[in-house]
Amino acid sequence: MDRRWRNFFFIFGIAATLLMLLTFDSSWDQVYRMLSKAGLWFPLILLLWLVIYVMNASAWQLILRTPGIPKVPFLKVLKVTITGFALNYTTPLGLMGGEPYRIMEMAPQVGTSKATSSVLLYVMMHIASHFAFWLTSVCLYVAMHFWGVEHCVLNGFMSSLLSVLTIVFVLALGLFARGFRFGFVVKVFGILERLPLVRKWAAGFLEKNRKTLLQIDQEIGSLHGTSRLKFWGSFVLEYLARMLSCVEYWVLIGLLMPEITYLDSVLIMAFSSFFSNLLFFMPMQIGGREGGLAMASAGLSIPAEFGLYTSLASRVREFVWVVIGIGLMKIGNGDRRTSL
Image (cartoon, rainbow, N blue to C red; front, side, top):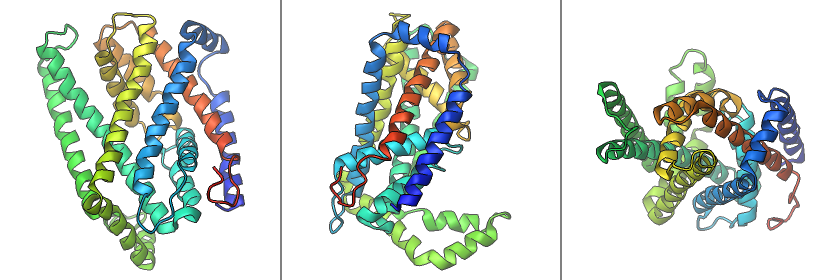
């Protein structure tokens, strides 16, 4: 990546981090009490997320591995993965910061076309794994109801809601499956051509870059068509990363409520992440996660203060990794490919 662009992302990341710090809606006394309560479990949760980022990076590296394309060192992929997520946490709309950064960092390594297609395919894989995780949680809730778990009550409203969500999640996964097989970039610009505000720009961009966009779509579809093992390996890694992230809530709430189970934490994480993703336009999904945690906690008969404590711990963990991610921008940027 050009040094000027990297400096731009770095300065932007620092400014966004400082803004997050200045607008943090909890006092330092609350943070201190939370860290004291978590004790040694908090640094272990930070390490847990390092494992999750390793899984994310491994999923992306599987997509990057293509015959005839130089192999990118794993530590380079891991560094860019962590920084990309840090930028996503700090920017509205999520993908406005991290994905352009990933493309620009990988372009000198594998070429612009492959960098773009790999990032877009990874984003699709990442989002599809969320839908698979949410669908799993719906099935889990129904199964726990039939096991006689007290808090899993299937009344008329809950049955209707779960039915609608199941249909939505299955349809979404079907759309992703079609995009994985045939690509989606050209079709997206075809849709944008019909929208009033961006019609002219989209038509001009599509006409000027049609050949490149078709090549990107071809590269997206080729992984599903010719490298099924890599495709499913990448998807499974992303899905397992979602399941592993539930351990954070299991540990944090379990410190105050030992009877909570891992399956309970899966339901809490699913409800919280679904609700917060509905507010994807907010940096760090501020408010969405807290609302989701509050509703999930109430549904599972967990005291509201436990949910707020868990949310605060999760926010602090995210902030630590944001700082680490922004700092990694200035590490390992030598001219050699194997600099990291």
